[in-house]
Image (cartoon, rainbow, N blue to C red; front, top):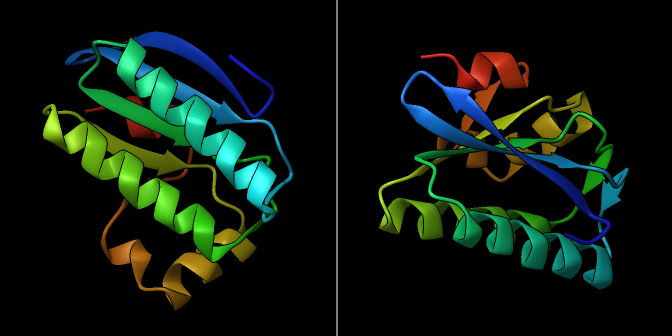
Length: 118
């Protein structure tokens, strides 16, 4: 993988879980968001897991193109019977999600352990 996310596979209650930890403090510019999107989709395609957890604990700021990538990733996973869960969101990211009403569309958890749990 590249420099935007750290990817690992963990064992969850329903099988393998793809855990992608975002390493960038912000996902605002086109190169940041594009790089994140490419890496996240590549990780999703390379695994045979039923759940992907996106850990955003290090992310302080996001932009609307980031939300588009997250929705695309969620749809991509759903098409193959997998789900996307977000965790570790900082207050600014939660507020941005709420402003776009995306908090209603996505599953959000406090941390990776809670997201992976049944």
